[in-house]
Image (cartoon, rainbow, N blue to C red; front, side, top):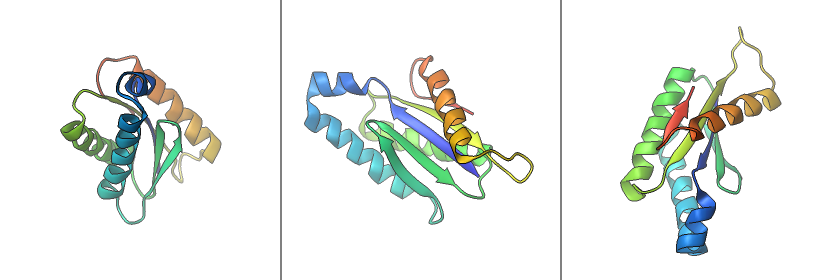
Length: 123
């Protein structure tokens, strides 16, 4: 299973510069994209604020990264001026990780991705 944790970079600046309606539109679009790009067994969710998660059962990190690339591509088709930072963690029968640790690892990787310019995936 892969766990994807991502956020919209500089989201507060979007709200401050363009208003909360623009910010809400960006959040709604992320929701639409997530529902469109995931499989029926996947679980897309908003974690809070401008952060989101994808729970991807039976999905290796490499496949999760492909899903994340599709997410970035679809997002940038409508919002090319905004970027996403994405972290991916993984659990498997050979690599047991509890749910809190999965979140912590993916969150840490998301913050590593934020250190780079543009949309980035840290796997």
